[in-house]
Amino acid sequence: MCGILGCAGVDDAASILYEGLERLEYRGYDSAGLAVANGNTLALERVAGRVHQLNIRSLPPATYGIAHTRWATHGPPTKANAHPHQPCDASVAIAHNGIIENHAELRNALETSGHTFTSDTDTEVVAHLLEDTYDGDIVASLDTVKEQLEGTYALLAIHAEEPGVVAATRYRSPLVLGLAEQGNFVASDVVAFRAYTDQVIFLEDGDVARVTRDSYDVTPATPRTIEPQRVDWKLEEATKAGFPHFMLKEIHEQPRSIEEALVGRTNLGTFDIESNDLTLPDLACFDDAVFIACGSSYNAALAASRLFQTHANIATRVELASEYEPLEATAERTLVIAVTQSGETADTLDALRKAQNSGATTLSVTNVVGSTATRQADAWVPIRAGPEISVAATKSFTGQLNVLHLLALHLGHLRRGSSQPKIHEEMEALRHVPTLLRSLLDDTTHLDQIGRWLADHERCFVLGKGQGHAVALESALKIKEISYIHAEGLAAGELKHGPLALIEDGTPVLALAPGGTLMDSMRSSMEEVAARGAHVIALTDTREAFQDSGFETVHAPGEEPSTFPYTATVMGQVIAYYAAIERGTNVDKPRNLAKSVTVE
Ligand code: M6R
Image (tube, rainbow, N blue to C red; front, side, top):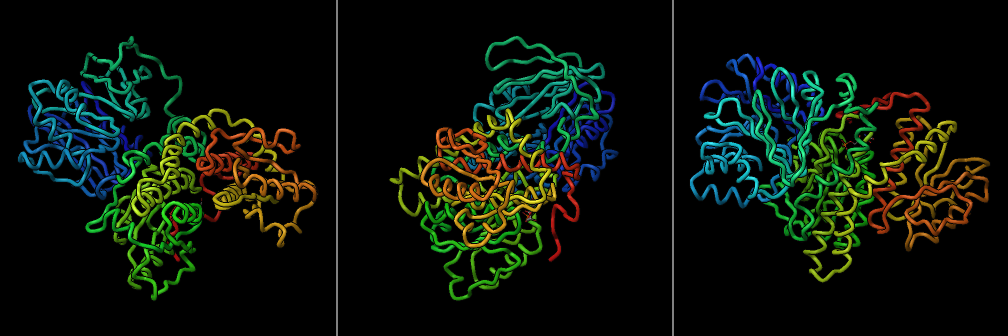
């Protein structure tokens, strides 16, 4: 996820773009840049780092330009990879949010025809394509070039020979025009220009727009009336995009972040591994995988490890990074997978080093491109969740699970051949996860009530089975870290081996009870605790099973067992959030915790 902004006809383009970038920084903050035009030359200022490191005084006075704040997905966050990007003749500058899926083949073709690339990004191909197609009208060029692009994009372009014109188009990535007296704007988010106007036009997929000082000219992809509308919120409300907390915003971003994670990865056999020498088929040669991670990332790895066993027939171990000791005897045939949102967790990096010293091959799965974990491991895969500000992991957890799930299916496909119906079915089911999460998040009233009810209790239990066990651990972690209620996640079958002694009248028990093969034994465990007085709440994706059970029940959308871990996770997050709200804790910054734990 990145933030992009363009403006036309303003008094001081560099300052206005800079100010807009600061407001967009929540969308990405590993590098930033802007391009403004003065006469017939484009001037760029880019930096690997935060927006405040940009030196806009180095730029000439200008009335139009484009800007970008980046959350890297292809290529580390270096100055060369920061946007805007330019082609060989520097005639164009472009800013992009999204992922150009077919960038490798486009790049090959462009290099063959003599273009020289200066970055590792997927985006740069667009600049060179614009250079090739330009015929006096940057908007027409962008319209032509977009037909060659596969993937997702919001694109802004300016051309040195067309003063005052910003060209824009989008596909599955947001873009909105802002119409102000001081000039016109186009950005990935209204917040970028809300200080100047409340009049906006949301672009649709395939629309192309020409933005100038006095006009905005939108060519709609499908016929419709283009009319400005008014946004009814004030700038002060917008730092969290209108949500009261980053955590709630990030919970609601999950349909989108999972969509991003799926781009380019749902066709079996096609899954990008970032590495100089390792490929997906190389990874498929390992018979053993050891996951190393901490906290939520550990829970994601635990859930994923079963998928590696089931689909890829790979033997797995999941280790808390702080407890990890490599087995040197098996190191050569072991793939060690470090799962870490930040890519900077000291315990995980230390375990990664130990794995490498033992001779194992290593892969990092992370949200932060350019982090130590991406540089240290032999290969890495980004989860593309966008910046996560709240200390509690939410969209990074579902992103990790999703990417590991996809990887397990791809490895299974390579190791076991294409005639595995289960792998195809599961891939199909994954495509529906964003829609299911959207529908779940449409109405969270019941989950809100449960969270507030839970707030009156000092302890609770979350039960799960199979992958649900890992989700139960994650839900309990969410509840304890932000509401300070003592929550314990349990494998349901373990109850009778000890924890049942803690159940008494009114003890809250959340039971993750998907339909399918696990239902009967989950139900027995629920009866067991109910018989001892527990207040059992079933979180389930099947309506029938609990109709006359007497258990309080929340239904999640979806019928495939493989989608339940995602919907169940989100239900747990929402319950934890409202329990914390009711208790009045500091949701985004819980006591004693930090987002990135860089000490052992
Ligand atoms: O950045 P990492 O994923 O390596 O962080 C590991 C844990 O510190 C982290 O997952 C932590 O448990 C969560 N923030 C809790 O919500």
